[in-house]
Length: 501
Image (tube, rainbow, N blue to C red; front, top):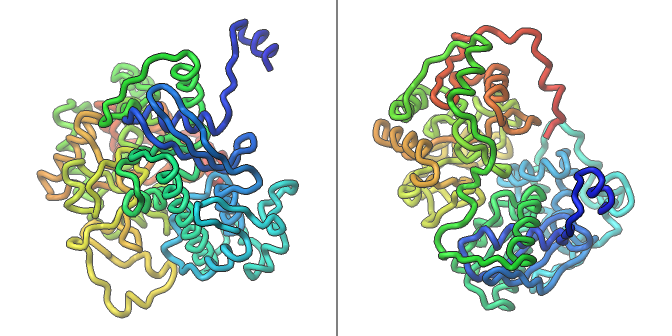
């Protein structure tokens, strides 16, 4: 490897190889707002570690303990992702979103047959049910027999069994996360916790740790998966290896809203639009908030392309599709006609930071959309006896609150709190919607369709806009209306270009 780097990159300096979970830990602690904290990483596997914890202090991280492959919480969750018919290392969030539709009827079987879970959160998996060590599948015939049949075929009808399996593995995952965090708190004596690794993207589990866990403050790396490991490796070298000073104020993190990607100035956007003869209307920064607020109120679906692209899997108000959270039909419209994905999948709310407690049982910040919290009781709608008796997907279309498009069937929501100093234009737009229409909450979902990466460039955004049923696209200061556009010439079949997620 060293010789390859020297030859291909013409680099003859020293090469540092941080370990996988060391990089996760670095990505969790070093950008955090804390000068000192416990650090917890949970994922599938990296080298041999699958879970680790330690302490971060100043510019150093000390790993205290690890759980090793093949015993892995991430791989257990991925096994159920595979078994319920979704794509491993991609569809885990679908399992999390499907879980509220089911009952935890298999939880006991998982804890008695698949996992030996200890009080401190350590565990071993019963490998006779898994195939991922040597085979090409996650599970085997014994797993099929234990849970009553073969894995669901991708894209086939979802049944109550898949919903119950999803709920069961989600509850087991939350139980492991809670036991581990209590143990880490006891062993480290820290009041702050930093988290990373793919399992740290389980925002339902994260929300439970915030509500019920022993730590006073929690910070989760926005790009908690392996992409964030690259950031962690760089920061590990900068702080721990090169011993550069690190000073945190215990308030603001160093991630800058995770707006770390490319940015496109209005001139480059204008050049693209004019070159391709795309009709548009130019709008000033001062006028964008009220104009977009009016369009949201008119039930329009809007592609929002502003500033630097987000680093990580969540759209945070730079490459987003936005809409009216008050609409009882908007979740279905955006899932089936814009995102072209399963109707059960929930959308997240973006809410003005100062107003979050008016709508959610939550009094902290969640800038990276990594925490789930209950919708406030005062804005919930009581269900009728007939509605309470509904099962599975039949629950989907029941209006549950005054913001039904972002209220999941268990009255939860994956929250993004928006700070006026971190993303001022997005904040002002939501504030304008609140001022005119009395609601500081909007839908915010990633600017892409199923299987496609989040858009990066103005061209990406326009093509995605034209291939979907979005009504408007705001590219910087340029507003584009769908009905004014000509159909794309010789467009690719984009649904076949990208694998299903």
